[in-house]
Length: 397
Image (cartoon, rainbow, N blue to C red):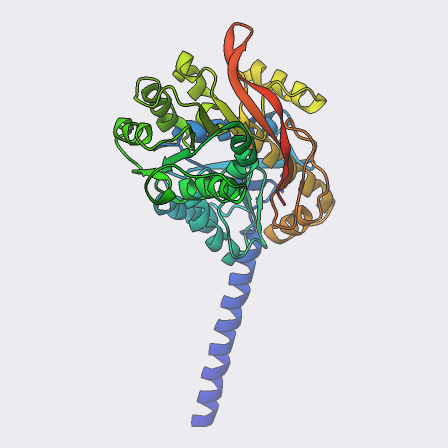
């Protein structure tokens, strides 16, 4: 009788375990990032607060423009966009991304402006097997199996302009940027290529000047040091609110007569409007300018201006392209089930993307193989604009 009771208890326990397993499996199946009507949930992770708030809003505008101009569908299936605030770096981005996965049950995450945020978020999403389509800066990552970037690798920006600066400047160049992951990567791309080409970095020990991040945006002490360093020109990386203050203070500083070269984020989007004449004649490098003459860009600019009454910028483009990538990926799945796994597999098989910046495709490193352009801030009609001067070459992959 005792053995029989044990057998019954064991059977009951096994039944409970089996029931729990079935329930868990069913819950997992229903939480794959879609809803009962087949809608695909997409997490849009961008900074809606902090130093890069303006960039986050530009990314949001670009992604939502693609969704709106494609009837809120990817590959013919309805899309629901869940927006989360990246904040000012990894410390705020990681919990926001975790909520998108654990509570909102998204199938894919797009966005991420800050390189530090990307470094924090990408490993978690990879562990959770959620694909990430980044639209901002990307540092070096150990594992990119489920990470794609529609924008750039952070070191590429400076690397693309380094030879041009070496050929144009007769003497040492001072290098300056913010002291965080994105700043380090952006400046490293320039300094590595510049010194390899025979260039000399001005300043103590030949190292870049690093400013606090986030900081009080008082750049004048650094400009005084640069003016006394023997530099014949300056290369910098700043973006958003910091870029506005940097440029305005530069034109009032002891270094104001030194030619200023920059990663294009310095004068991109609304920052150029805020900088005004202080930004005139700055040379910058970027993979987009609104005046590029191709069919995709003409349509994009018309759609963007029609909705926002403003000229689009690179952040709008990279997020818009993230929408195009997901649209193409879901279409490639066809009648199959749309899950994080099938989305990742489909992105991996995509070919050339027709983009406002010109056609590009993912390379082996899951980042765009694309052209980079030298731009100069000068009048284009009634307003200042980043006007393309020449192509600097093709990088990426």
